[in-house]
Length: 111
Image (cartoon, rainbow, N blue to C red; front, side, top):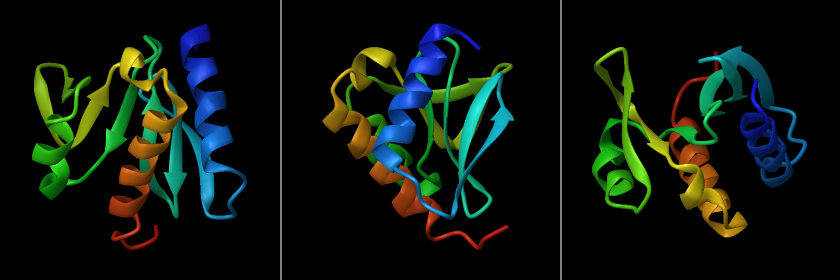
């Protein structure tokens, strides 16, 4: 993992805190944060953050500066957006994105 990915992972850990239902798992070339077994977010080696907002949350999330559609191998990933590292420099913005992820993932059954 890159330094940018490690730094963002540390910041995500700080914002989320030590909650018993949060775990980490290697995914997408980085470290994904899981809530009750469902992917919440994943810092990338470029320093951006893949966030899970759900299909119904896509339009609202994409309207926020710094967010774009997640693309894997030329295929759009419905329910996920990528937030640029520049848009996450402010801790309040990071906390807002993580809150958005947690609210959506809380609607999913635990794995």
